[in-house]
Image 1 (cartoon, rainbow, N blue to C red):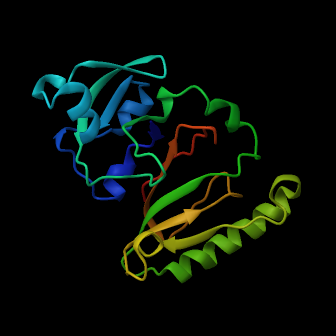
Image 2: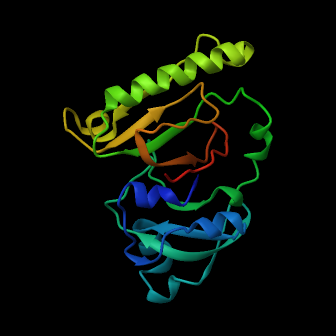
Amino acid sequence: MAATTADLFHVLSARPLRGRTLLPDDDRSKRDVAVISEGMWTQRFARRETAIGERLVLDGRALTIIGVMPASFDFPIQGDRIQAWVPLTAVDLPSQFVATRGAHFLTIVARLSPQATVAQANAELAAVTTRLATEYPQSNAGRSAHAYALQERVVGDYHSHYSSWSAPSVPFCSSPAATWRTCCWSGGPRGSARWPSDRR
């Protein structure tokens, strides 16, 4: 299961196979909803159209299914495919990281502005991380953030308008180079953190 801001699907231009994806109000209103994978829809619901609106229990929480993502959507990319996406407020762990600057494991996915380059984004991130290291030396000294083209990182030397900001040191990052950004955390031993989403 992945807990994410609603902008994830918009940033990746991903459309559901059935139903809808998450909306900002799902997070603000702390709605217990989930978008499931096509694999889960097939295996657990026999591809029933009526699966939309049915209840699903994940990690002990009852969620209402609002959409199905096609098998081609596989994000975040990891060993085991994600089977469901829920609002960040649907998980209980993020709050413990809001007041601390020690959660150095977050990754942002962003869509670059048409005129922006990955190099420009990296220059801005360098300025941000330098400032944070000065303001918060205990948690940020010696840490950095780096932007790279997502498709290039995944499939090789392939140009893309998307970037992934590996930001193990930046509790929150804002860059004029990014039009949209989103955060996605996948459940597992790494823990959880809430990262606000911002649209420019």
